[in-house]
Image 1 (cartoon, chains in turn green, yellow):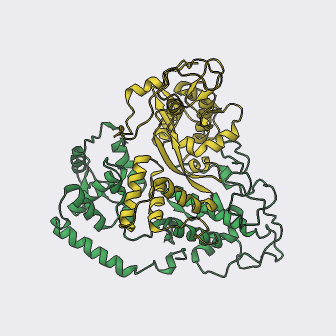
Image 2: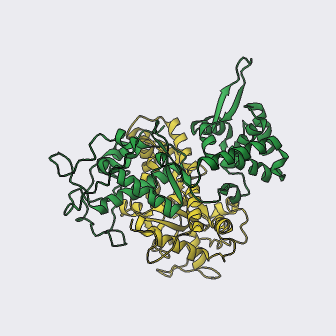
Image 3: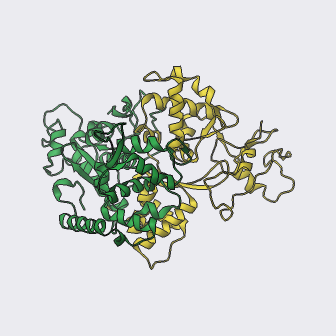
Length: 321
Length: 266
């Protein structure tokens, strides 16, 4: 997709007026010149941070050892050494700087999630954490804390293997807020329509079937829509790219036909019960009007409850909550 | 962070859900925001009285203050509809775009932004933007490609297109006002009434001061003889109507007569 512009990985930062170590002040530390990615691509972006020559190094910011295989794998440096050991590298940053990094990371994660982009750990390090890699753990932990307390979101490691994170809602009850918001069909309504069609069919949905359904909403493959734009591109490319749908050729069929399946991300983020609720709302029926599907949804809900009693198992979570 | 219960502002699940939803949607109109607020109360605190929106948001903002983010309220420049977005104050908002766009695409936006700010009308023509395609940093971009990128900006609500010309979306203004004012201090225009950044507006032909269309509407409301607040000369433009949320059932659809508000050639 988009190449990360070089500036984002530039770890050095323009020196601000001497350090904002007094982190008790609630206001923004000084006027913040937006060192802009736009303005000078050469100059360091991503916010005002005092150069890492803090007034005096505070007690070692290395938090107690937190054996997350992920972080050890991704970190090159040895994070367990005291920073003052004979080692070329920046002096430990003031707590305020770590806090600031945590805030940047928080925003980064929120935006990535908003854009439905993958939150990839190496990207987080490259784009935000930069030279503070050694303190990555504590930064991550603080970010998770903030996200949980302020936004009610869990920053969850969804796959150690691919080093992907996801922002998961941590509020009860889980609900389809999107559907509550608007009478018009937003993007997610469109997606849910297709997902529920696939679900109800119990197997892949042929493209022709999907268009039959979308036609009811006034959407045609050849017509540009005022909200969705090129609908066909949206469902066959964008949703696929975001892993919400799979779009595959039906084997052994000539002329070629394609069908849709749930994508991995849909399976992760959307429960069968949510689909049932969506169907109930759209068709103004009781979810039990689709009895076998409803049973499946109940099964899944029960399995989920048993797997995650209160919080995710510690292995996968970087959140304190 | 030293704890979320600061001396001002307490976050409950109502507020958290609200924040989540606002973040998910990027930018929302006021009527959507009010519905969303009610929805959040319904989910988490059915029996509580719904706070006045302004107080509700101020409460949240007092908690967000230490994170250098804020729920900002703005007003669309063409027809005065109130909009809300969660914006990052600490870093330039372009870093928000930067996760989405390649280097040459960002540069295209930058070029378009400069043209828009420098223009008299607040609009930059597609032709003029595309003519700058050769000067872009990063990978070489053809004009055809640039047209698609401009459409991407429109879809992501950074730009608005009207009749082949581009201006900034209200969301972009909300997010980037600070950055724009600091980066283009000489060419930036300011509204004489509200003192905020001005991209589209009306200007006095005598003394040159400018006002947003919604600001003009409010200032000259029921004034039979509108005069420039600065030089007192007769105000030569059509006075638009003040936005009335009751009348606007479908705020997304701009009425055709609003297009005439663009006509104030200096």
